[in-house]
Image (cartoon, rainbow, N blue to C red; front, top):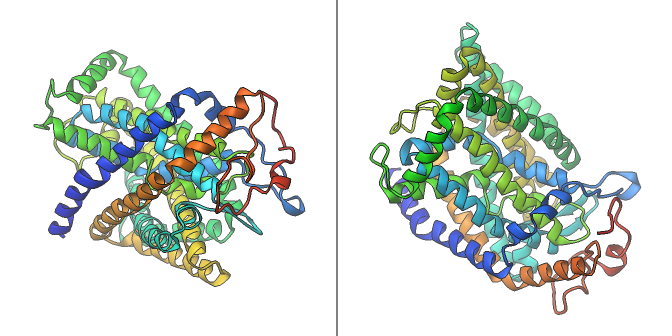
Length: 481
């Protein structure tokens, strides 16, 4: 296992991180800073109404697709991940997390735009993601199959076991704080309840997942942001020093716990990528389900998800830590929880336990959804999807009571492989992304609400939807610019 971890560290440092940085910088230039110049369109796109589906059923809205991806993004990485990054890399890791998010938003835009371009239609709505743009865009269905298998092992299997274990631990900690005697019995009870609730949601299908995510993600984010803001206000006199330490440590002017500049950068970039998943190829699976009039609209919405996750949620975690006199050097200590306890007292630990429960459960649901998309790519049948649902519920139960260090370590490796395969595809389809964006810009300059069809970009092949007759129809809720 030590050999695996050592290899994985080198693989991330020398392959994954340079590849994501190079891809993001390329898109930053070719799209003329799409993540900056069209920021207003990101916000407007969240409000677009998808209209009615067949037989009067609602389609998946851009906001629901955003919420599904955020359900998987916003998890323990926003708390424990930030804590580990600061403990090992010092406050400067936060600066590099910010830089990573701002830069990688261009890649997040590209992958979700491509997911929309090459999505497929099903009786329940749309499906798509990296496997589909590898199949239809690159004409490499075998590569799509490789990606699908790696994603299934990483997200609905390994990561859900980790999230389930975190969920159980958070509930037990809360019960301990209330004086309840916990042990193996309470752990099993919690595990069974979590598995049962997971089953209710995942067996309900995409619409139930979308509805649940739409409700849960804003609530849990607002509760956490409110808690963090209260702590920052209480410790307002510490804020200038915290900000100064971020920038001083980021460039090696100050060292914390002996963290060299290289360690600071690697921790910030890697943890930032773990948190917002930009370039990983996970969020496009959710982005493809949305009903929009132009692929770029959902690309922008998913790029906003990177900002939402890292610039907003992770920053609150960082300021909770940095304004409460953290102790650096021990990655096993949850500095966020320690900061909450120091600022607000023991009662706030119960709120933190609730937040962790919400974060981990929504991550379980989001991770499952990614797995379903990949299973449908490999073999779209009721039996295979049903088997995945049963497996996920079973693994949630096992993960709640198991020791998961080995599972987490292996998933860390497969996530790096998954990112590599996705980034190769995104680079290979750079021309498509740029042409589709130019079509969007052209229509906006003409004062139109952009509408995409198969004929919008000459020479574009492999499209499964976007028929002129359908796409030319008025989009419900669209407004003239």
